[in-house]
Image 1 (cartoon, helix red, strand yellow):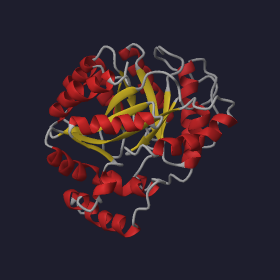
Image 2: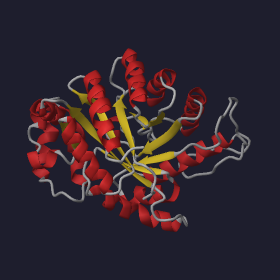
Image 3: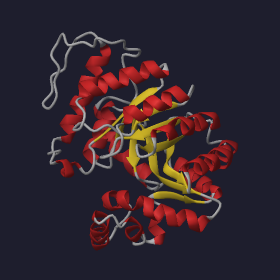
Length: 340
């Protein structure tokens, strides 16, 4: 990994009232967070809409999607949104892309996800270059001479790939600036993901560690540890059921995930969350007191991650979560030398 200072970020799903995002983003900017990501998961508000509100409320913090999928937005539209937001924010935007979960609910065949992601990045790059060079892919293409009719601030923006997959991690090693392990708070996953990315870096002639590792997970912080952990169980249940089986450092009982799936399809999130073993919860969520989160985050940095992202709801209320993270967690990590 790079010798640069670590980064700290916050992730939001597009599930709050529109009026909430501006004040929350402004508070995070004031507290010195480095990044806000906005998730594009199925049935969340589209990331660009939320990021537009946040751009207007902030001056310094970087903003990005975590992540677009190649299925629900055509790459030329993604490129247009990125260019618009990059102008609006004066160059603070990055682009996150992932295979996407729950695509079966839309009856979308996502089996060609690697090709679709590669082509999405290729089309976005061709549009942002603004020279009409075109791009020919197997899933998405753009004819030569097709160029944007709008201003483009930067000819390229940083790219983050979200994945647990070895194949997509290989692609990230070739083309990305960062790889995000979504839903993971597990320090042991950092060297695992670095190992999956390394062959792609080598294939592209990039130096080892060129791609930064980012871990992001549901977060609930409060001075009441028990209340925080109870809430975290409910909040993390949906993502846990999808990704727990992907964590190579765990052997999760398949029957447990099957039982959780039945409950989740009936929207019994609290009951499903109670099935998560206590000794497993901390690898899929940041939850507890501010001191607990400081210790947990330090372990992930020490494992080699460049950035940790705390994901909504953040606290028992969004505002309280931002306050505790900004006044107790970030300053302590800065005092310990992890953050600039």
